[in-house]
Length: 180
Image (cartoon, rainbow, N blue to C red; front, side, top):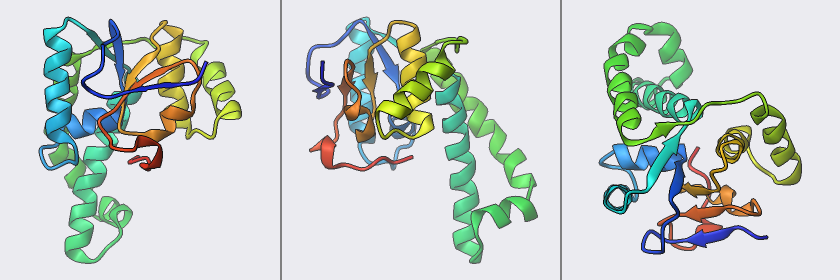
């Protein structure tokens, strides 16, 4: 069975996994599709959909926040973000309250799925069958191990995976490239 692509106005599944691309757009006011993601989250709550995420969502969200701060400083000083990290470790400490706040918000909005021992082999199977980045494969495998087959994402790579439902607000999502 092919992937079913749905927009944010389509019928909702009872359980929906939050991919990091959606979480980032939801939390960042200046992100592309922020308003659509905020409206969709309101709809999820109003229709009593159980939103779920995992440690992978938390990890990637934290990394995105760190990298954004380091990249902005790198752009300001003309340095690569990794050089900024090496030269200014205090920036990571200064960023921790923001990361903690976002992860706490994510915990309030989603139920966190556990990552069982079968996730890793399933993720590698997905990577062998589809041209997925490991992060995407691990998100999908984690959800599928908990019998969750519906995802909200801005990442068109999810559309390659058979047997899942993908909610997105990206126009022509099969032409849109991954943000992570």
